[in-house]
Image (cartoon, rainbow, N blue to C red; front, side, top):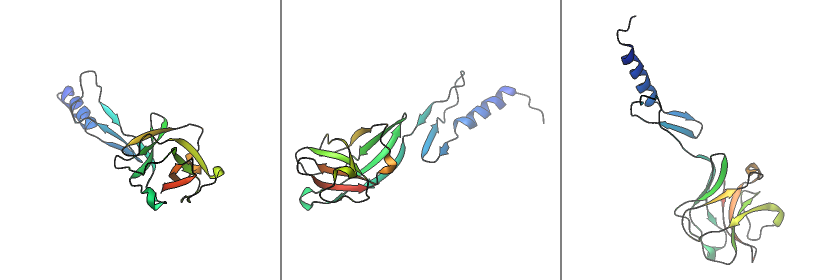
Length: 158
């Protein structure tokens, strides 16, 4: 087979590459559907990778909690993210914890959890960096917990 116009073949090949979407596990690479520029660069957007996720279940009825949580990786860092519809009751010294069990009782024991951070807000989407030294595979849930009174408001199995 003989091609009479090499540039047509080259541009067709580049266009085919430009509209291809590659999916590996839950990491998605999205390639632009626009033809490649003269420098052959193709814009790429790398989506964040959701590692674990769960929906909050209220433990103390007077401390109603709703929303979801997920652990994501982005640029080599891990973050705990609360959904935009997250809401919990107000309280003093409310923390976010990673817990070793899939369910968290009202009064967790200190050796069962890792304290991620103080809750930034009682409502809305939020993000917390998980330190590199924390092995998230050792934890099965995320809790909303009042340190002052050692009371769990809610947990989400992840």
